[in-house]
Image 1: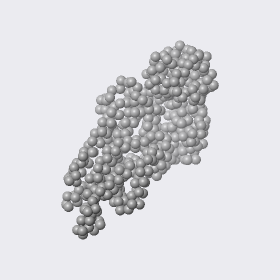
Image 2: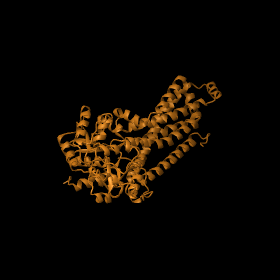
Image 3: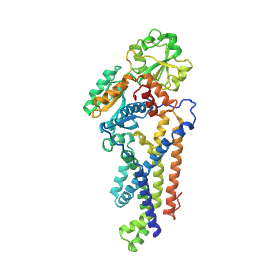
Image 4: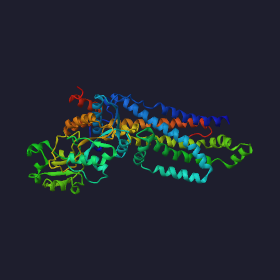
Length: 223
Length: 305
């Protein structure tokens, strides 16, 4: 009934026989990992941009938003799942709520910082050119905030790929389910395979977001 | 200007793409049969997955539509899922489940039936029921090597009382203060060991100490998959010192029809701790999948014929 630390065993790093017969299991875990990450990032972005814009306008809201999501970040995931299951069941929704919440803290902060950094004289120039508030936001402020938003998106992407593993507590977890399997069964192969795939996924995702940033914000080269 | 507008669209498109990718991954539900659907849950360790598969495959053979929610973290997750119907049943352990559902009131004893009756008194009002406990147990146990067993002709813990002064006990460092360990062995069984070595609970240190003869008696888990490979024999806890962690299915009363109860009771009545050791060994040393192990077990015991 317990996970045990690795014994000095003859278990190879990768057992190719097991791996060759469990390709669907590994691909399924990888697919689930990508799915959980993609929903968390997309929803996080959809929530964060308007919330960041609103918080940028109102100092009270800024404190409330950063305070709320900062506090949310400190709730242990096990406690959160136990609280959510009576309402949202053993479902993808229960898995996504903490992931999205963690993302929003990162993203909303970067939206805010990006908007804060738009120079006053640029705004004055836009006003002088006759921009009304909404077009000014869409065509001047948000484009200038994009490098900061993309920077947040890159941090959120890589951190979500790592954090997705906590959803193994409710039977999901993506690659985290393989890592747990390796730990519980004292079996290297799923552990090693999942770790390699997780690193590869983070690298590919980071490159994709960096590439998107290069296309979207050609004047600011991503680091 | 066009460029910046395009970049915003790109960001939106990225978000939309991610959402579409996510939506494509939805799972399709299975059809239902006349007997209805039962969702079997399980904890995140091989033995629990195997037991869940044994129950589930037997129910499926009997005509139920069975779905699985396995590898769930802990009772903190499983209990609310059972209460709200996300799962209908899980393989529980009498003493551990009693102590969970009674908020650690310390009511569990070494008597499996009494412990299960107590468990039922706590969960019945919540629409749940625990069935008849199996004699198969996954709990703290004391093991000796085959050589020691043969040398002293041992089968149960009481046999150690007259010869305890010749033997060394190895267990976790907390053993001398825990009622189920050294104090219990002294008061319940009258065993006084020559010495006690603080090691670990069924871990590498205990194994090494068995191997080089530092200890003759050690604390292990009764259903551990590598007991046979290590040449260890578990002594029967004939005076019920250990809390009875017998395997017992815990169900929602809604699905606990006589037919389901009879089927699960029949499985649990036949299941032994030796079966658990054997199946855990297939999982931990041969890395077989829980569904295949369960299927082989049910086939071997003619549940499918």
